[in-house]
Image (cartoon, rainbow, N blue to C red; front, side, top):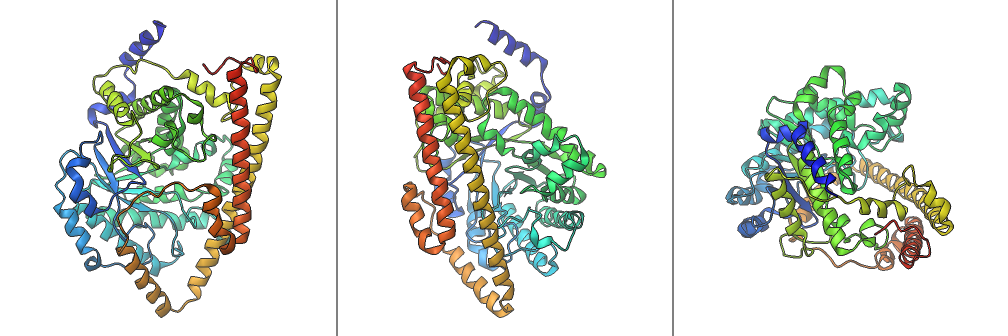
Length: 518
């Protein structure tokens, strides 16, 4: 065991690029989750909030929450919130971001010049709010929680992929220009970017790579980034937050992601923008508290369920440590079923962050590995078995039986998920068509009503987790087709949980004779 500290010490002496970057850009840890606050909550609670081990937060406004917003806002409607932002006395939290989501809520069309005039005006207003609130920038969540603006879908059947890419690139330039007009040193923190397309980037055949990209859910994301690079100012930095880091169980994954964001991702960048990409795009990293600390639902479908409480905290410390170590500057810490600001925090979570940050600040090695956690990930069918484990399969027929069953259920679940996503997209497109059929007067009336509701959003509080059967009940009458698919997915998840639990009992009882978990 003495070899591990020695190797870690040698690794520190080598000083990789991301360690050198720390001297130029001290690392910042940013909090974001279902506990995301509004300005009035921050103003009232900022001193208590700044006791937590973060350098800043992501927050939201009431109303102006969508990057591709087609509701027309003016400053007078948001002035009370802007006044509150101006009154916040930030102290320790010096790197704060205003959040915008990418959901195509109102049927944004990349080719709609009138709509994009509204979008850029709203973006300038969001940038102004961030500036007044002394934020370093804007946080963009590319994940579409509804209609997906990034997919090359049937709505573009009359246009080639290249034609749509060219238009999206134009909008990317307009997007960054609108924000940097108010924030010339903008930090645009994206939860993910080209890091989401790693497997496509590795396709060596350019033609096959382009075909795979055109069929991906995030097909238009590279074009949007190229557009931003076309117009990006010298003081702007764009951070690829690498959401995939949620699930890492070894240092190599963090290191590989860092290398990809700096080099491998360049296959998606046009030649004229590659120098800009190298100079203004940073590699970020992500931490998912719920995933490591067994807060995700349904229980039994995630690795941490099969870990001891001690190992869960070790995994969390490990990922905090290596996320901070390998990021160029920014790391974001995401959570759902907990609340940093109302003291609903899992035991040991805050201490784990402080432990990892202290190790980083002192330039000390982490001091432990989590190889056993990676083994749990493999043995309960969360990823493929690594090479060299064939002898375990040969000596353990029950293990083969369980893994085969797990693979079968996961394959069926993926198929159902694909059907659900297709139906969601269909529903969103139907809503867009209905919206387009309304008269301008009808749309204006609806938009004004929507703005009124948005401005009255109450302070956010997490709701108790409902059993899946209860959560699905309202869907049964509203959308029977979606209900049928959602219920099918739920039953598959329960079946998967049961098989994994049986495998866990088998291993712990010694019947499988694997001996790989402890």
